Every structure is written in structure tokens, then in C-alpha cells.
Amino acid sequence: MTTTRAGTVIHVRGLEKSYKGLHVLRGVDFDVVRGSIFALLGTNGAGKTTAVKILSTLLGADAGTASVNGFDVATQAGDVRESISLTGQFAAVDEILSGRENLVLVAKLRHLRDPGGIADELLDRFSLVDAATRRVSTYSGGMRRRLDIAMSLIGEPPVIFLDEPTSGLDPQSRVEAWNSVRELAGRGTTVLLTTQYLDEAEQLADRIAILHEGRIMVNGTLAELRALLPPAKVEYVERRPTLEDVFLALVGTTSKSGERA
Image 1 (cartoon, rainbow, N blue to C red):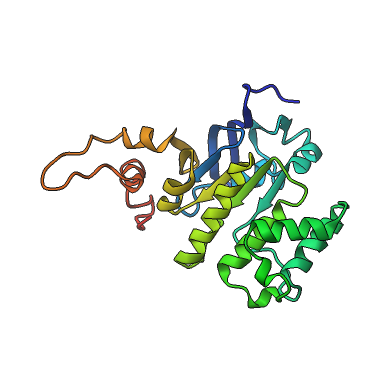
Image 2: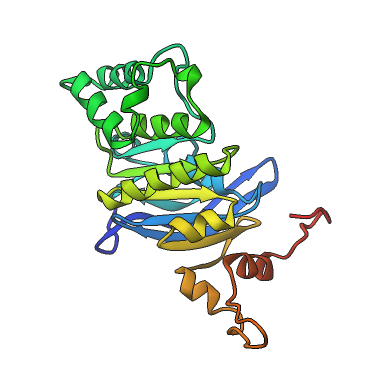
């Protein structure tokens, strides 16, 4: 097992990854403590998904080290996989089956006792009881995402990766997904969330790291990030810096190619 500071569940140092000369990660460092929500914030192409793929053992790093739940992602991949669950950008649910049938199927695949009981508990926990027997094809986007997260929790993994969990969802569905994420952390699950939505990071994260052009530009609490900019000036209305102000001040509004970020 990899030695890390007490309470640290995800430990990343010097992580690098390139694709055919394109440097996606350029020495990424961060830690995530147990039971917290950590947001990895950045524009499309910043390297967020690549980092998650490395941490979930789906991709090898070119350099650097990373551990999840005390296990090295390169040398103890099997132990890492037993400790995590990954929810991608698109809900991985079977639309032909009902919500309950999806949950029961995953519980059976994981060889757990009482799959029906597990399914019923999760349906209640994620407010899907009324839709339990309906085909998932009839679900709203928010309901599918809640079901997807519920499926990810079968077996009670201590760490869950949420890669752009609200991408493409309408505002109401996003709020439903946010409530589900808060519920996870409230029960002690460690959550690493990638997002390009600034308000999402503001609403959910205990700590926020801004990833830009393969590097972590800043890592801290929302209050710490706000403190990077001048304090609010009282003119007609007092306005504190928002996370969007911090993000755009650090990253800028245009990419290297000249396109707006």
C-alpha cells in the first residue's frame, strides 16, 4: 500500500500524460480527503477526463504516481477497482429494463446477497420508488442520472468518480443530481467530481482545483479562491468575486488557438 497523509484517500503527484506529442497532463498534484467532495474544474480538453481515467486504472500515466484508498493505481490496480466506482458523462443504464431491474442486475453481477433488498433501498434513497417498475426509457434526464449514480453505489465503494455528471441535463435535473452527490458525501463517500460548470463546483465542492493546459493552477476552498482577487468594493452594490471571476482571471477567456474558452 502507498503511504499517504492520514485522512487522504486520493493522492496524486507529478502525473503526466501525452498523446502523440500532445501534453494533456503536465505534472498534476492534488490530494482528496475522506468523505469530501473535490471538484476538478476546467474547460473542455483541460485533461479532467484523462486524470479520472488514470485514477480509475483505465489508462496508464507516462510519469508520476497516484493512489486511491491507499492503493497504487499502477501496481495495485485490482485493489483500486474494488475501492471505486466510476460514473461517466452519459448514464450507463439499460433503457429496456425498469429502474429496479437495472439495480438488481448490477447487484447480481457483483455477487451480492439480497439483490432485491439492495435495489429497494437505493430506489428509496434516490427517490425513485414511484418509477421503480417503469422502463428507464420513460425516465427524465435527472432520473436516469440518479439511477446511474445509484447503480454506481452498489457494493458501497468508498470512492466514486463523477465525470461531468450533469452534462446535457436541464436545470431541474442538475439540481436533482447535485442533491444525490451531496447525499453521497453525507454518508461518508469520497467524491471526485469533474466539471466545466462553475456554479456546480461552487454548490458542491469542499475544495476546488482549476486544471488548465494540463496543470493545476490553483487548489483550495471557495473562500481561498475568492481571496486571490481583490476584496469587494462598496459602490452602489457590494459584490464579492465569484468562482467565475477567479476562473477567468487565472485561465483567461481565450485559448492558445484564439478560440473563446
